[in-house]
Length: 395
Image 1 (cartoon, one colour):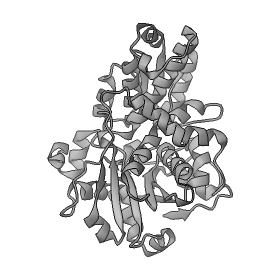
Image 2: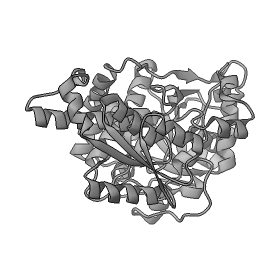
Image 3: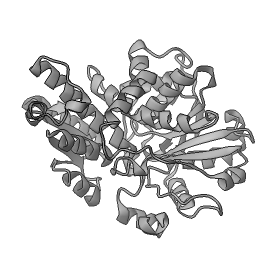
Image 4: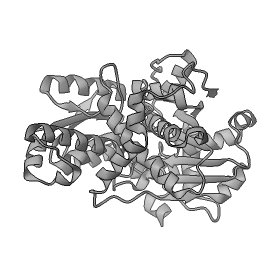
């Protein structure tokens, strides 16, 4: 299924707040944070010329976020960054002076952080980022996980010293529970989705993601003509789409938002012409994208900057994982998790469908960028779906 963006807001300017958060200065701010992280390296931008030729497009590059900050996911850029910004703001207020990233190791700043508790709901990767950020600054993290989060992903979160709270139901149910408990205990919710009256912190999370495109543009000789980005609540798609629009203007790539058919809340919202909650049914294999209600901030942005929305099936995502793990000759092998390969799954589907291909202008001049949003964050599940262990692919 495929829809061009028909919203009345399509093509209109971003709000001043979104522009300030997600433009070039927003990305530069994230860069200043990353500069104090000894474990930071820009993630690789990998060219797949043989697959591009097979698809009849000019070029295909993959930004591999499976290698981000040791957390195996793009989420490493969002939750941890928001935690750091919130600690700096609180420390500055309490100490009565400006506090910067270079001050995070100071005893008085860490004393402020030690009094703070950060909570969130997660499908796995966002919670890991919030937990890692809390450990980085010396704060406490409480992560709410629903029953669909795999044991290995829960253990990875707990490995950063976070307290784990189990929640019955779906990711959306865990969001509600995290907000409810945090309100009673005075904890700070660091969510990657927004709702009425709560958008400043999700904006910081999204700001962290802008570095992905900033890094890619610094390496590419020409900007991409097409950007396929997967979506759960829509945060990364909105962040990259907004950043592209703000820094490239008329030269921005066409943004195609890709969702699992079993939890396509943005697609359902486009069809309805307003934000709606998708019907919950069987779980999707793309566990990190299993979200049934859009982030209001992401929706506000995607209405303006997304060019098209499409749905992929579970088997298409698995096929994309396998294509990256077993590449054509001369193309690099890439470890992509179930959700990490969804953007490529969208491209593969669009390039092989004549109507979608023509609607998007996927021709021999197209320069396509896709994001591998996660590596094998659940190695056992990866092995089950691909038939190879992650280390066998990387080798």
